[in-house]
Length: 172
Image 1 (cartoon, rainbow, N blue to C red):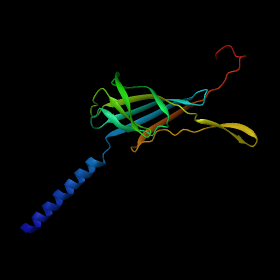
Image 2 (tube, rainbow, N blue to C red):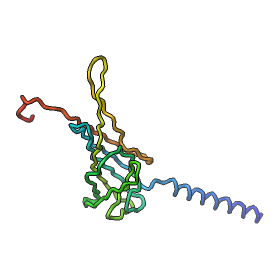
Image 3 (cartoon, helix red, strand yellow):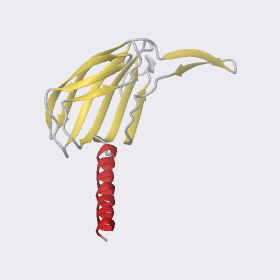
Image 4 (tube, helix red, strand yellow):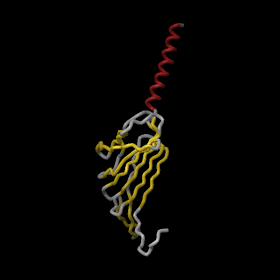
């Protein structure tokens, strides 16, 4: 009887430990609430993007170790973060091969929401000309940044350069 009780207790404790360990390793470090891309195609066909990541922290950190893959060549124009209405600095460091680390000048806190903004420019054209049924068209190619974590909401806005005829003098 005692042997049965020891085996039962060992089994129950083992199952509890396995469940605890798997739940800790399976939980995401953050919840990505939203990603936004405000992408403006410039007159020369290059692209300027304001990329915004909104996440809820489940741990604590002073950086996002890897964001990407960015199309190269590219240049970071500016980056910053906000939380509780307060702005903080974010420095983008290249990890190589189009991936970057976002280093914060703060330490995040569990349960708080953070917004990271990265403005960058892709320094090669993301548009090219093509013909279809004898008509000229312009194609646009650009992949938004992907994450291994689920994203609750993703917004992509693409602004195209449109020349307004000179006859229009007044904004409407």
